[in-house]
Figure 1 (cartoon, rainbow, N blue to C red):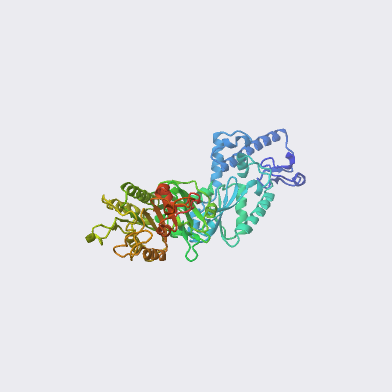
Figure 2 (cartoon, rainbow, N blue to C red):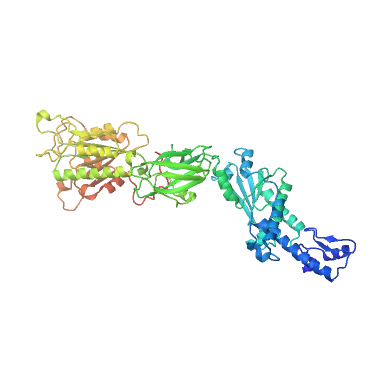
Length: 601
């Protein structure tokens, strides 16, 4: 298309033949800008010079009005202006554009307020880059932030032929010479808008906000929506609709409750399941705070746990996910501040890291069943206080180290009792004296204080073949009696000598006096097993092995240890506190993958 086929002022395509035919009868004007294209007159040389000067001035005025619609300064568009303006010309163009601006539109916030709560609104934003469509209004489709982008359509897709350069494109959107037929532009934009309406705006409230008011092509988009949607709302625009929505929605209440994801064993079949601990109810606003208690997943103080706040939908949708190192002890406090829908700040713990796995990845890490270490634990440590002094000290040290570790890892989630026994007195008059001391089931730190208060064995002879272990077992059976309430129960026996027989004339194979109090250790074990207690033993010496040629007496083991170590048996030289905790099931095995979420308290 040559210059004769375009309006010399606005560059809109024209039918040159039709213009020439009509010019013999009347003045012919450009339908787009009103410029006189031809008429029934023959200009002389002076007239042609004046006409050229008038056209040059009109072109600059035309371009300056486009630049004034596009921005507050003409310099970004200088290369597209047909002339260089004076300050007076620029200010005149700005005044003309300001006078032509339409009345102020209601704000998007006002549109949302008028709409009412929990009602979807599709927002069509007309911006520099093109159109963006959002959904908001406190409905699930709007997502945790209160708004969600549905689609983005660049200007070249709406109106082919616009330049790629952003400044040049904005200048043409604002009415600068584009060489695009307005009727074709209206039809093309109308077709694209029709597709968007059918896909996103059917049977839902819609608002159109233009960040480019007064610009011809963006105004054509507004006209297309109003033509297709008679009830469409027109709101004041903004350069960045997402930023505007962010500010507006941040001041509104949350539409759906938020909860913290946590793990538990599902009642009935015991399968691991993700549940939500309530944090914020629907209607909570910026400035509200909430807190919830959880149990740290077992695995060490350095292990990171995902703190995932999710919506109360089915399925839940993540609002914010962080990772944190939970503080000492299993019972942890998670405290969160709400800064608006989808905007959360973690106040406790203070070891939060914003880098976290995605929600689907965290769900993939949930095991089919929780490890035994994930359950609250009741543990009774039965400790032989007598025997050789050095060995007795080593037994105490092992239990002390175990209690310190449990305090660090599990805190008050583990309830631990320490029960110690001394030897029965040799003097007949003291034979029935209670030889057991200790405390109730309590937190590991308190149990450690109980351990420290246990008496030391008096110096002097002691029976090498038995100790009053049966008395401690009787106490342990009483402590681990009653409903389990989902807790795992463990008896840890740390001793060197087996119990006395319950009655009769002692043990023929192992000559030992029966228990003076006639306590039967097997009865106590039966009560413990009925209560679901796992039996673990740490003996002074390892279990003898069948070695060819070994003396029969040395290869014989006390049968009591097979019972008291039914779940696991080891010896003092072969175990430390960390290894023992894993054997007891209160800490996970090294090969077990960490749990992704904290546990329900």
